[in-house]
Length: 506
Image (tube, rainbow, N blue to C red):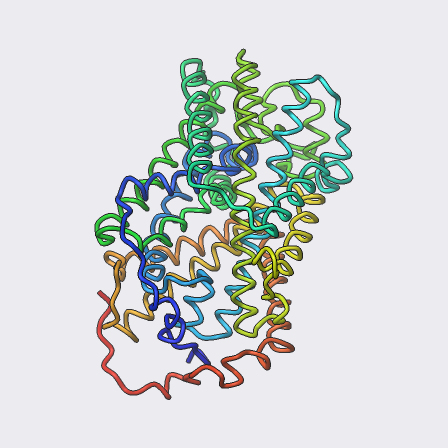
């Protein structure tokens, strides 16, 4: 049914030689998730969500968080069973075969590389706002925005992507102490924002609550799904968790719950102080985020300018009389967001590395630098593409395209959990998705729902990317795959698998 499958035991052969120490409790897992999730999604995409849903974006955060929660529970079971590099690509290879694995890996390029570009653009917005308000320097918009956003090229976004690429080639990585400091900075910045804006909320700013109806809320949920990407960092720690059956759900749901509450409070602060209604064109059409039409409209707008701001939270604080705190929030974003870029680019290079090691991509991609001991070839190639994405595309478009790949990968993992419960029910699972027969289908349906709520242009881009992926697979990867060449034991079809009873999914 699924074509040639790389046996799970073969994938685990190396990992099983090493034993991971179980030291993480529920609190550590929750904090890990909070640190991984909070980033560009809340610091930047608040403005994008406002343009699509208005005040209804508060509901959008709940929808996106719920879909992430059920997907996370499925992701955790696979991560606990297969604690090796490759993420959803590796899981799909073991369960649903090479073609599905290739498409998942191909989609993950959208998740990681384009997401890194989106965060770079978000960082650029805060950096330019910081420079302008701190040093009163007028920065030409042509060089801080891409052509789809009313400019020529986004040089700051391109530069930060290049710097992070250099760090990854050198092998520089964050220490636990530095990462903890960055998490504290992000939490402190959002806490200050909430404390200062909630007391001055005006109820009239929430009317109309859903100016574009539920379709607008759904579209915003699909966009700000990006705000939750990173929660899988919790699930990948399953093998290092004490009592994973209890602590993993607490860490996953706890971190997503905390982030959702933070996001809703921040959204309430933005809406209640400066408003968040969509902007309309001359013909009554909604001006799409990241288009020259919206940029032109923003140039003449005084009220509701949050939908135009590239640094929405800092801009809001300055608007309500707290310029210094706005400066601090901008500084916090500038300090914290590069770590998110680093982790996303790191994830992309490791996906490429594993695909290359499996023969699906050219083997020189998996070359290791003799001095720095990093996959320098694929790191530099990834860096070039991330820099180009950041230089020429707006954050909203990049986030939406990234979400399309992420949703596809999460749906694939949820399907894999269901399939493996039937085909290999006796395999040891350090963590088991609770009520998987209910949770996994909800996860799949939620991912499909959010995917279909993306813009038509984004969906077309995703399918265009998928067609290119199929072309590459059938013209190059299939014939060079190590599994295809027989260097790894393989079952060509389900018929070749020894007969076994198929237990019910529980």
